[in-house]
Length: 286
Image (tube, rainbow, N blue to C red):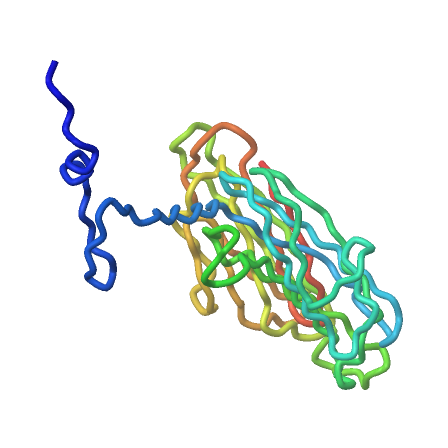
């Protein structure tokens, strides 16, 4: 039997020489490996909702929100809340809302959660409109809890008329939103979603918002008509536009064309409206 080498010789032969960051050699020392940060899920979470049409500053109001995960992965987003200046006693589903932000429970793909935000509404400096903004957030920019694929449906702006403020004759419009779906009988066929935004009020409705997303069976958007003089963005999944003013009794037609992807009900989720003219919501199916 061959005689084993001494322990010192074996150590010398088997040593691994590594360079430390300073350039100093260390025998047999393997630096620790930092595990890669987990990749946040990628999905599409959007928010829709309603506010009271009118309120007196100081009274309790309720904002009713619908948060939906339309993407392929589960995620737990943040809901950032901005209420009219002077608002107090804010709650989220009955729990105190502090810091203007709350981490929601995880939403599975296709899941919808209905939540409410309540507060004693502030006077907002005495203005005619009491505005509240709600935004679905990914959290810190450098450490997001998920990656959102469509920003068009992340922000919801709600407006309530201040009953104690002097009336503004420009804020008595009334927006109605209707629609219908045609085509798309087979996968690959063209789907047309026709939206009608109608001002049924007594005065002009200004800066009309139109926000929405098509559902998964309807496929990706290939064309949108009726937005030629508006401003905003259209993606393969939705749109977020500000339309020009509508005089009383007038309407605008917006048509969204897509290519059917899968079986299931065709359509999308939309809302349209303007300050003081309401923000109607439409779950379009066909």
